[in-house]
Image 1 (tube, rainbow, N blue to C red):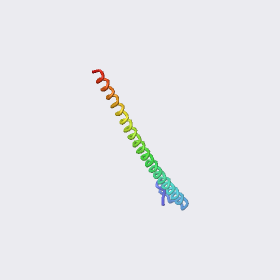
Image 2 (cartoon, rainbow, N blue to C red):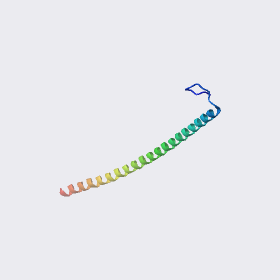
Image 3 (cartoon, rainbow, N blue to C red):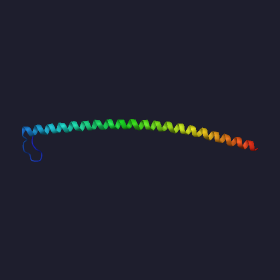
Length: 84
């Protein structure tokens, strides 16, 4: 094996060190990629759960608002009938 920049041959110890560094870098890169995948999955799950909760709350709020609106309209209708 030779150095790319100088073209000189590497000594066995240099070659072993370079291979060990490359393997270590590869391992670190793989671990980082796996950690990022897990983080993305966790975030995806949490966002999905949050969206579900917001949708459920919005539905409950709409239903409650519809009930209140209906009661208001019914009271207005009753009041106008009494006035007649």
